[in-house]
Image (cartoon, rainbow, N blue to C red):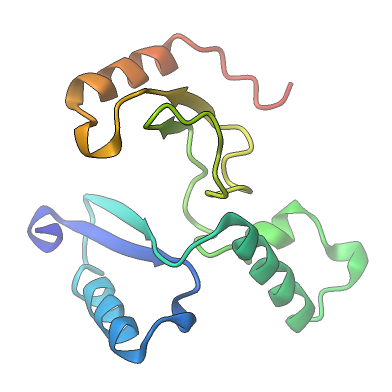
Length: 143
């Protein structure tokens, strides 16, 4: 379906902790969709926001980045999907009002919209409500 729709698949998380068979299957799906130009779908698998930040810091250490050169850009470049834009809108289903260890670095300035609808029941109408709410907001990015 993704190949036919021209969607490229990216997978983020601690994939090295998965079985070799599962790693190969994921790599195959990523490769099969690598030519997609109509959009990118990022799947978080064996993922945690804190783990992502820890792994980025470990890369900084492995790359021998001097302490004075550690800044937001240096960390951003070492996240799981450094070229992926930060989300503008985080939609929480099931009435949850927390981030839940998801994209902790990336959602720093995301707008949050919560709904009581559970994910399996999340509808186009729910998405329309979220987008309408988002469209009415003034984005301040921490200012």
